[in-house]
Image 1 (tube, rainbow, N blue to C red):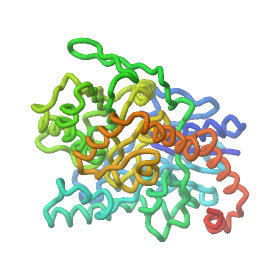
Image 2: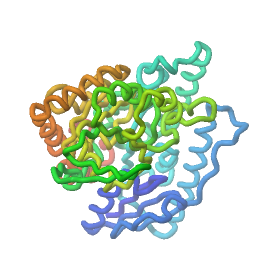
Image 3: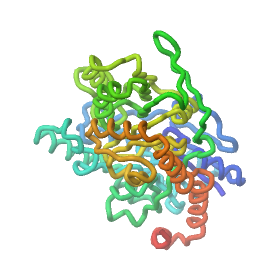
Image 4: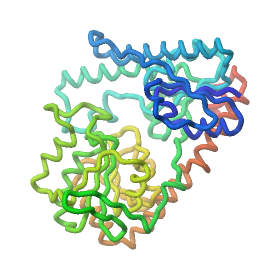
Length: 429
């Protein structure tokens, strides 16, 4: 069988599935942007092909359409690459593609009969999900209307991709729920999977953090509060967390707080006044903080992130109604006691008082109260830690749950007659 994966940052979410198929003896090709493929380790048995970086949308293009123009250009670049493969005699039996940057727009025009599976992470909404969730950043009425119109247009790429695929995969039920109802019969839920043999509790774990005065050693004898984002920004509750620190550090005089995350913006608007969100909210509270106990470590290697989760006393994870971060699942797999926001993505996994604790996203005092409860009753909370890991092992483990689900789905796809493909698969969900 010939399998083609298309992702601008290949392998993206597909490394395990691509390798598993290659190990089964299938011919596997990964198509990605050439610049993104450089300096990435090879996947055994997987051939990688790069295409030139496409142009972005022109600055003079209407702002609603600028992203889509860039997506169209990428889609055209994908077509050129597919035609080259076709001329070389490669015809896939199955195609997996992430639609986020326009990859999926024209695949069916090149290979109309080949089953096409898309990975759908989020469908944008002008209200009632991430946009407008945080009143602190509410726009004026006219700007809010402009934002809603822009976001509606932003879904052009999503809609064309949803129409084109034979089947779509969403990592969580929440992410499926925000997709248009008209397309939900095409969608099934399979998470990318967590390697629970790596993200594992370790009572002997230790981690050293450099500081201006001396290296700080963290282990299970230390009160360690962790907070992890790709970038420190409001979408992931950075502002709420920072506002809890003055009281937290006062009431927990031995606590060490470790924040992982970059200075950029992954989601939402940039910070005002040419600042970073990190600097904006640090400046708001820093005069009330003992900064010798607050450690901004930037982005860290994965192995160090796992060590941090292993020594964490409490892990705080906050998010708007948006895509759920892998880091929360990895923290739970390491046996972290997660204090999470009471928002739909988090509530899908965390049941308050059973495998974690939940707080109102905006309530900094509630975060401190929950952290105090954990520190005061560590033995009582141990059952929550065990249940957190059990949740991930039983429902999100890469090797025993998610990868087998992916491989079983492929068998369904290939054994289903092309004429009844979408209907037959949706009936099996």
